[in-house]
Amino acid sequence: MDVRPKGLSSKEHLVPLALYQLTPRTNCNECGLASCLAFATQVVKGEVPVDRCPYLDPKIREEVRSRVASQLREGFGLKREDFQISLDYLFDELRKVGLDDCARRHGLSIEFRDNKRGLILPFMTYRLFVTESDISVIEGDIELDPWEKVFCLNYLIRKHGRPSGEWVGIESLPGSIAKARTIQTSCERPLREFISRIYHSEER
Image (cartoon, rainbow, N blue to C red; front, side, top):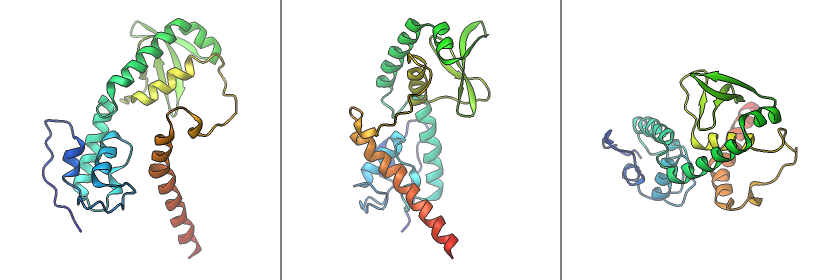
């Protein structure tokens, strides 16, 4: 079965209903979600990859993937106002702690860039420049999403610079039951299936 795509408007954000119109609308559950509308909503929010629907035209998948990535970088689909409230609060906490104290706690250096004073924070495979009001990637044209900024700020304002080494399940955190289900659907299940395919192919 193939879904013949209609043109997606480039003048407005991709919304769940527009993507829903491109799905088979049969609620087949092959994507792991209860309905095609649920799938479209999760894709636009960045919770589920568009490739999970096997019936979407490949060209539409690529266009949706690109559009969603761009929108998420802008904050669209991420409840931007909620993230902004969280970021404003965390930057305020960072200012209370102070860059010098953060540098001392975490063994970081402080530099001046473009007449701004900030921390140099190693993150993944690149370095971040953290001021009292912004976080940016030093090398390359990379834009951090709000989740990454929240993660970094939470780390910096901690009293201790090193992790405790104690692991907790995500289900034990407040309001995380829905997130745990999303992780199971979007990460654990596909990873398990991927590893299983590799294992069985090697057996042959």
